[in-house]
View 1 (cartoon, rainbow, N blue to C red):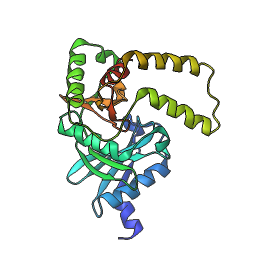
View 2: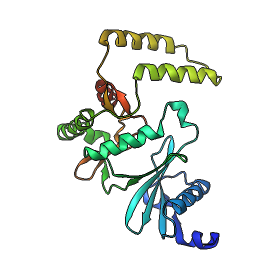
View 3: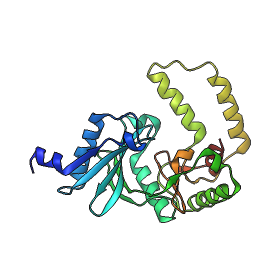
View 4: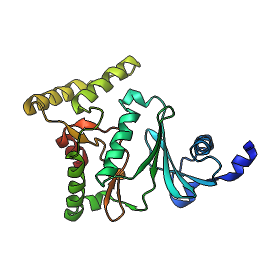
Length: 237
């Protein structure tokens, strides 16, 4: 198929008019077009950029046979300790226990992850605070925390130290307040002692929850075996 024919087959839609990302970048969408051409060859597709990604770019892809989210990993995200293979495993586990979307494709070499699109609604911070919603979210988190081990390790104390070291290596000045905060972190670590690691999400922003009648959790890039109480504390703030 010629490049012109491929371009005609894959329609690009500027999602800004429908409340998606306001930072529409044609270059990124062209990259998504190339990805879609590889993932769904010779199939008509419609692509819309989705907002909300911090370290990634997300696109809604409508093709014959389904609607999907294509997550394209950002550059050098390994500096943040992100392991794409571990993310894929955690996302697959989340689907198995009923708290995440179905993960249908992972292209390790490109950092692409394809999940089935969830036709649901976001949950506002105000709604998060209601007893009924809190109970539903707690039940979803417990299902994941109680599931078998997943790849990767996330130690909240060690992660901060690693970020500090990497920042210093790249010439970033470490704020003077860091040492005082780090000492508090060390006191907490010593007081709690060793904790039994369980599968954790570790990035429980309200934007990572979707309600489609059930609580679904997305964006598993920081997942790993960790402290369930860090997960709960992270969610609470």
